[in-house]
Length: 392
Image 1 (cartoon, rainbow, N blue to C red):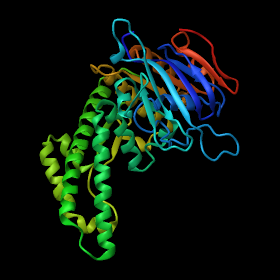
Image 2 (tube, helix red, strand yellow):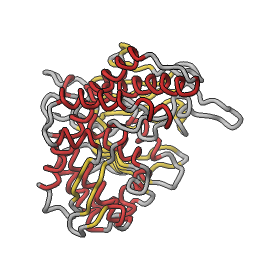
Image 3 (cartoon, rainbow, N blue to C red):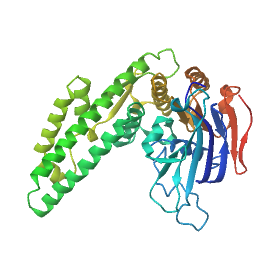
Image 4 (cartoon, helix red, strand yellow):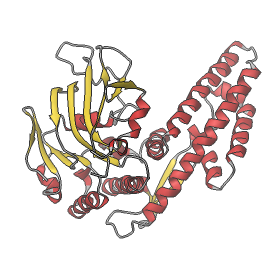
């Protein structure tokens, strides 16, 4: 096996599962069953084998199983065996990954690789899940913040340092706004030395964020443009933020950093009065335009919007699958077929097969996955547990 893949997955007191084990052995999997059976819970468990809060963005205590009357989720664990580039030696021995909390109500996440406790960021060395969920069906109708979060996950998958830069930016921004709002409320001047230091940090982190977003948009647009023979609508991508536009225009990072720090310094009084920073990469947006219909994605039908996002996710998977010395992505597609016609469902199955990637898909009806039969493991999800239907 030459690609990253999940071999087994075991859940303990996770969401609706007291204990469950799924053994895909590197194959793609389609999960079908009634609403509420626990299909998405399995995808969420896989998504937590990467840094961050997973596809639902849930708190650590929220995902623990709860019995009636219990107000706090139980201690929980997700364990897996995976094949990853770092574990592919002469014997191709799988690597053991795990995450969870050991005490009910505990806020600290524990991550272990081969039994050793490590920082969550180390998971990105072994698995790289990319997901599409029904919540993203409203991506074009939501506020800009949701589109930034969606796009930043795409950036992070290709440039893991992006998350660190974004966290540094958020931390410095919160501290700067605390100083400014305290000054505005008290009528006393803020500490200009500390503000200048924070704005320098914001300039540096913001320039790095803007550059990473610009690079990601450029390679994704090229990938989408090369996929004209697929039956998915082509998109034209744009970043509307001032700082990302500078990066796309080739402005040097050092100049973006200096301009951003200067703009923040000039906006202290305005930001303090507003109670929020009105300039910076936290204000930008991702714009998507349907090329063939020549209209913004927000004006397209639900089905077209779904297909646009799916094509973007597939383009992301395709370009990441060619990255050297990094795990191939694992696709998590929740209820993905709900708004796809028969032709596009068939094309999706062909695309997954052609990319050679492992994918996990969910749906209520087994017939939605007819084009994957013989190419993926079918698993019925019900109150009785997980029942594998066929091998690949």
